[in-house]
Picture 1 (spheres, each protein chain N blue to C red):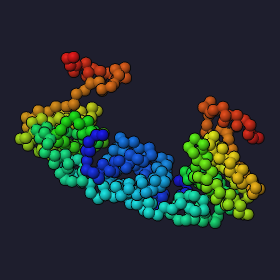
Picture 2: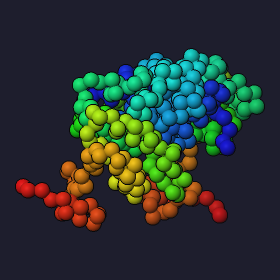
Picture 3: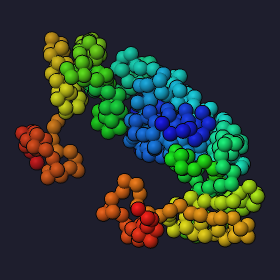
Picture 4: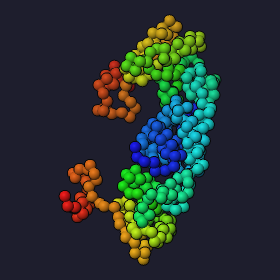
Length: 201
Length: 201
């Protein structure tokens, strides 16, 4: 443990910054100095934004999104297609889909994926709530937008099973070559999937 | 510009986080989500630490260090050798030297280096104050701990010139092979310097 080089307030700032994702002890120190140099334009406003966020952010009881209102902005949005429900693993996936603007629907955040290794069982995810929401007669299709990992696919199967009695159309994201991707760098699984799901040109 | 996916408070938090060094727009989004998930253990304390820091941090009038007291903790420390003055470019360099524990002396932060390209002239740096401090009869040696860059060395020459009338011993950091470094990966300049400054084994 190196000795403290600054007052306890600065040391505490560095220690907390070091716990942010993407910052280690060394980069936290650099970040702290940059913040201190931009005290009025960055440090103070960021501190205030964090305080406000910590105070106001709530998890949407409807879909599991984080927002400052409950139900969240997306669930309140009456312009969205209410017949579609997009199931995602995490809020970050919801944000990614929203940024793409690919779908104007409502979401359901599972809060993770099933994982025998990490001890994540169905009751740890909001699967029961999803089945409840999918039972709404307005919903006709459920899109499983889960990560294409083993755990993601296991979860997709489980969720499909849990909703099978509802008779909803259940779909998943297409597998294939990423837009802008080069075949040479792709794995065999992706290439096989892209060949199998080939479309008319 | 992608559409806002969350309330204005979250968007503002993301925008401010993106201006931190080491974080881009994408990693700021991820960082924001992580912070929100750790609201009570990280987001709220970090916001508070930033508020406190923004409120209390001052620049030491003596040496240019940042701290919550003026003169700073280092300048107040009576256990330090008052005959030595270590000149650094930036507070980050001061912190780096303090972490190494290599020297128990006082510092002087120049606040940058001379640079014709960036228009940094002597009056932009705290060189006049350095000469004032070096004139203190207690000071016998000034160590120029500046970066081994062209601008750093130009500044070192300028500072030496500015202090020449004081008759103080002026030294600079040794050049050589970094501890743990492999010769094969070192540039010719470093190797030449290491050979020239070789020491008895």
